[in-house]
Structure formats: structure tokens, C-alpha cells
Image 1 (cartoon, rainbow, N blue to C red):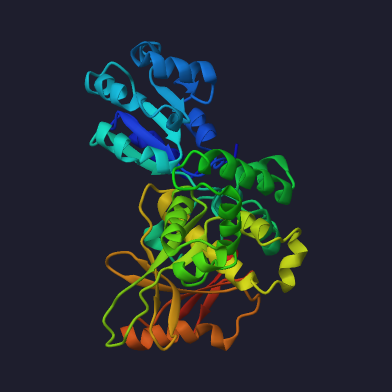
Image 2: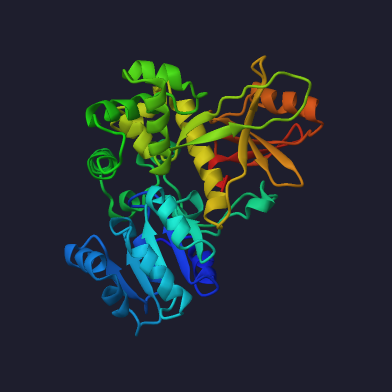
Length: 398
């Protein structure tokens, strides 16, 4: 197993919190991480039909089976949502050791679950691998970004286009699977199993086409009306489907940062896919070499870096504090990292050679905000300082 940054935080929270929700996309490694951190805990998969029947028909008897263990991992708990009200009583009476519940966020954070275990549960999210995890090195501290000494020891990483094409799901890297074939199965599983079970998605073929249209807009400002029109659905349906894709960790939104520079600011969020392997599959990219001349390579790289920056926070048990900035004149910074005491502007460029105009956004933002130092993450291999800014290789951004 590739060591995960979230290991320590998961271990810390089990005990102080009687229940820990471990959420994230399918195949991100939730089960493997839980069983690695807690090898002595009882493990029950609720994908198993008999276990699911027992938990549904006799929840008290099902939970009584776990009493002798030091704790328990209940996998795929979204399959038995009625179990949560019974878990509440066992947790309050301290009849069970710590419970680790894994599953998909749209189920775990539903109203029913939140009401049943409010104040009793911690919530952690596990995304696919970060660059630090793939390179088997320590992850950066999000509060210390950007690193002063950015060259990290660790395993050699594949080339950038290979990384973008393969994505960061553990199965692709751990088992040497063909990315295009694996992501094809992933999309089918997601649509046919997860989406079919959700209300509001009646036409799966149209929904699948909608996902592909979203892929073509990764890295762009969201226009739900135009997106819905292209897909042949209403604006309301498009917004509902975007919420489903966000809850399923297919994509997420980068909200604009509002700061009064006496200028009119853009208010629409940016859409970003959370994994570029899935993004490349949906764009019809069949091999890494195709990325070299692909017209969306810059947008794919931008979504990749944004996802890596999210992992800096999420894999340390924190909510991402990421935004972007753009004014009505088109001046923009790709990412603003809000660390409370300071804002870090980040510009993202896919080129392997740094050009002077790469700093245009950082310089423009600095002139308005008074923050003269920013970060440029680019597609090259070297990290250094230039024009007062940190220049970071993509390899060193997490």
C-alpha cells in the first residue's frame, strides 16, 4: 500500500470521537486506509448482501456482534442508512469501541445521518493520491506553502503528461492498469450504480453526455444555463446534476475571492475536475502522447494543480481555503490560498519553460493588493525565485 497522508489524522480522531466518517470518491483507498490504520478492528462490508440484510432487519443484533472488538470498520454504510439511528444509542451508551464508517459523501452527510450523529462524529475526506504520496515523501504543510526549499527527496515520478493521463487513483498506479480502460469502467460504475440510486436523474444517457460536456469546461467559469442548453436540459436540472457530480467527487468549484479593489469582480465559480485521469478519459484522450498538442492541455494542467492544492488541506483533515480572483477587465489569478493571516496568489502555467508573461497575473494582482510575492506553478522541472516570486515545478507543488 502507498502510505497516505491522512493516516495520522484518522488515527488521532478515532477515540476522541466515537465515530469517524471517512468519505471520498469510489476507489480512492478508504477501505485500505481504514484497515491499515486499525488492523485489530472488526471489519464488515455492507456491500455483502447478508450483512446488509442483518443490519437492516435486526440492527441491534448486528451491532451486538461487534461488542467484543476494540472497534469496527463498517464499509459502504450508505447501503444501510437506517442503521444510523441505532448506532446513536450504542455510541451514547459506550457499548461499542470507535466506529470507522466509510462511504460516499452524498450519503454520509445527508440530513438523516447528520441528525443522528450530530456532535458525535468527525468527518474526514480521502481523495486520490497526491504527488507527495505517489513519490513516497512527506507532504507539505499547507500553512507553510510555498516551501522555501522545494526540492523533495522521494521516488521518481512519471513524466508530466503520463501523470495527467493516468490520474491519481491508487488502482491505476498500484496495479499497472491501463488508465483508459480503468476509467471507462469507473464511469460506468459511477453512472449505473451511484447515479441510478439518486433521485432526479431519470435519463442516464443524457446525464453521461452532461458529464462529458462538463469535462470540456474544466478550468472555465461556470455557466449553468449554457451547459444545460448544450446538454438539452433545463437550467434547474443542470444545477441539480452539477450538485450530484460535486457530491460524488467528480468535480468541484473554485469560488471567486471578493476583495475591494474598487473594481467590478466576477461572481461565477470556476469548474474543475478532481482527477485528470477521469478528465482525460471523458475528453477522449487515449494515450499520454496525445496531450502534447491537445488544445485543452493548459486547462487539464490547471485542474491538476488545483486538485493537488486541495489535497494539501483535505489530507490534513482541513477544509480547503482556495479561491480565484478575476475582475471585469479579465485580470485574474488562478488560485488564491487564504491562510487567514495572509493570501497567497498562485498562477498556473503548463509550459515547461518560464516566460516573462507568466507573471502578468501575479504582478497585476500585486499592484492592486500590495502583495508583491506570489507563486508560479509550471510544467518544468526546476524550482527557484524570479522577479520576487516563487517558481515551483509541478513536482514540488504538494
